[in-house]
Image 1 (cartoon, one colour):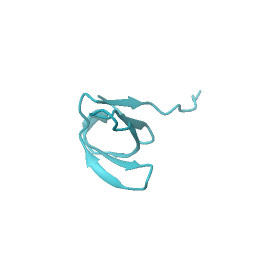
Image 2 (cartoon, helix red, strand yellow):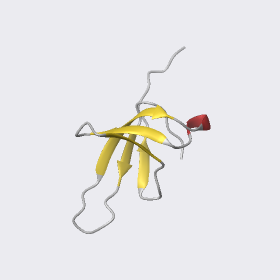
Image 3 (cartoon, rainbow, N blue to C red):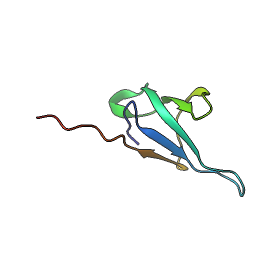
Length: 66
């Protein structure tokens, strides 16, 4: 899994009735975009996490240069 600052991390609910959670990646702590990531959830809570297989990175569209 690779990500950049500004990408979104979608964490799927693990049990019935648990909703998916979305967090913005505010800092990449691993080398070459690898975890762990410092993330900020929609409620403002920040944490450092190494996402598991229940997570997906949604890459932020960046303007093209050149």
